[in-house]
Amino acid sequence: MADRERAPETRAIREQVKTTAQREHSVPLFLTSSFVFDSAEQARALFADEIPGNVYSRYSNPNAEELVRKLCAMEGAQDGLATASGMAAVFAVFASLLSTGDHLVAGRALFGSTHQLLTRVLPRWGIEHTYVDVEATDDDWLRAIRPSTKLVFVETPSNPGLALIDLEMVSGICRERGVLLVVDNCFTTPYLQQPIRFGADLVVHSATKFIDGQGRTLGGAVLGPEELIGECRYFIRHTGPSISPFNAWVLSKSLETLAVRMDRHCESSLGFAQHFEGHAELERVLYPFLPSHPQHELARKQMSAGGGIVALILKGGLDRARRFLDGLDLLSHSPNLGDTRTIVTHPASTTHSKLSGEERQRVGITPGMVRVSVGLERLDDIVEDVEQALARSR
Ligand SMILES: *Cc1c(COP(=O)(O)O)cnc(C)c1O
Image 1: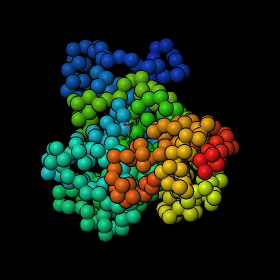
Image 2 (image 1 turned 45 degrees about the horizontal axis):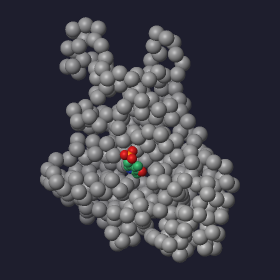
Image 3 (image 1 turned 90 degrees about the horizontal axis):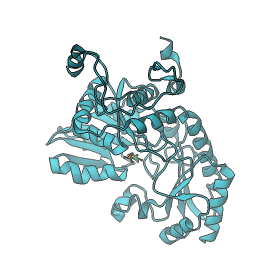
Image 4 (image 1 turned 60 degrees about the vertical axis):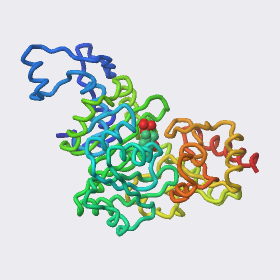
């Protein structure tokens, strides 16, 4: 009972696999592909799903279960599943809930591989999609939904344009039309935003980013009501995108420090954004918790802090952005995000290079945009490196 009143951050630290006969304090790694049966009757009952318990690590594993229990506590979800990567989670949702002839609606600003799934993979099975622009009104969302629409998929804030989608508005429309709302909550983590509170049905995560937080392992999760998770569980058990016990163990440990890391990512990101706002070498700085962000009020409503990503729009376009990246001394130039180390990425020429120029324009990715995943280094060292690279690239 007391458990229900404890804060999600506390539960992310205290939810734990039952201690073994060794009385260890830190949870061990259950590096085992299968589990032994106490009796023929137990084996039969486990396979018949009459009793809970581990059978085989493609089905379940104590480390994976612990990770899921912590994520459920933080998201306010009833049930969940851990997967080998964020994309495995996204695909498991589509493959579990959609059939030939079904249609889905998605916010246009999507992670690159999710865009590939919608445009290249799902059409092979006769599943179509409609994109809705980032600044869409409720009428635009309503118009996109067809009788064959089964789900709506969104990311908020978007990567890398940091545009927000009003979760309460979209979930209201989904409920009215009997369509499921699935939210990719990777950018904010369950610590800063809980989409289920705003009416989302399912939440997916790439745990590879802030949840790991140290750039080490891939992982993902799907969270939501028991019935929908049951459908995803069937698909995952029999097709195999299950998480490895080692990655689940790393990610579960990482969740114990998520709140303190995110507090620092958010504090430094806001300080970074404030420092560079109005800078003579920049056209613009985008960060959800800057009052100048066009959806600042919505950000305050659905996020408890602004997150760890800032977008800088450099004066001088593509050539300037390239010189800027080559002029960095301390910061990493890499496609990842959500690491202890600050990472700078040029979306137009890397992560979003497969989009056409027009598609990039529609999701706010300009040639001079760089995405900064603000890390845990001292803020003045991060600022100083960006300042010197801006000066050198002039
Ligand atoms: C990285 C990312 C994914 C994919 O996650 P992987 O763990 O790399 O498979 C999905 N959605 C968003 C928003 C991401 O940033």
